[in-house]
Length: 296
Image (cartoon, rainbow, N blue to C red; front, side, top):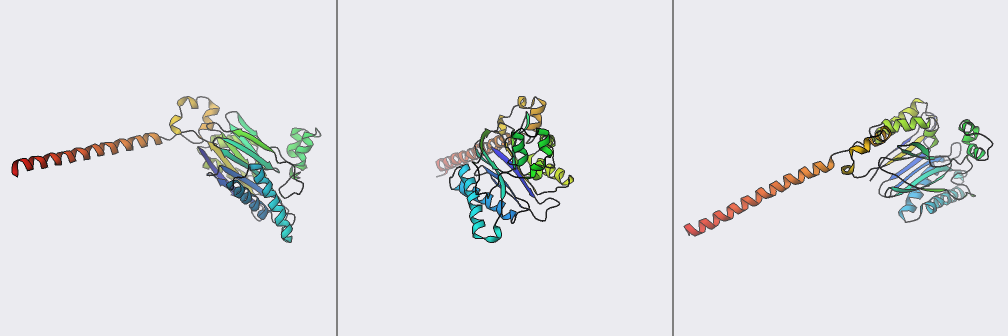
């Protein structure tokens, strides 16, 4: 079973929200897009991206095809409407099949895996800073504060978009997949994100606390993210699942509920009522037989 919570907030500085989010648990689809700041109609771009991807997935297209179609939709819209020329967006999208998922992205919106081992980034940023890092020109520490962090090398709406990267993965009990724009990953350290999620008693509270922390940090950009967690049947959770300190933090996101016990108690009461009803019917039948024998 997948549980999720999503946030899409304007922040404290931007004049409008240019982020868009789709969270469709029925399709197993989560999409987070960030309209490129400074370009015309970033809000239109991000909305068109998430809506096109959701529609194509619903029609049975593959994840990569759906993202490619969204890119084509941006290009076509910009060509047909002059005021939309130059619009662009980032995107990160996950498509689940049970507890397994496909992940694709364009731009610097990120995907993180949060598990008992910690927080690890699954995506790679399509920006100048990361490109310089890969070429060995700057160090990993330098890349975090490099001006190239804000210079995208790929974005949705490009004519010459390179092959869209795709990663396959799976979530185990209690694991969480985080999809986010740089409005979250920029102001907050990865260690803060990890600790906040682990210390929260529910996904919803984790989302609220993360947003509060970004707002406290000034929220210079729109902030959007989705937290997706895999949970097995609550009746299968054992005490041993909570032994280690790290696993306890992860598992504490959704405390175990005694739904199975409640269902069993309800069924038992219903069964007793059924037996009582049958006993009353038998008594009435016997009374009728005796009456017929002795009084008619």
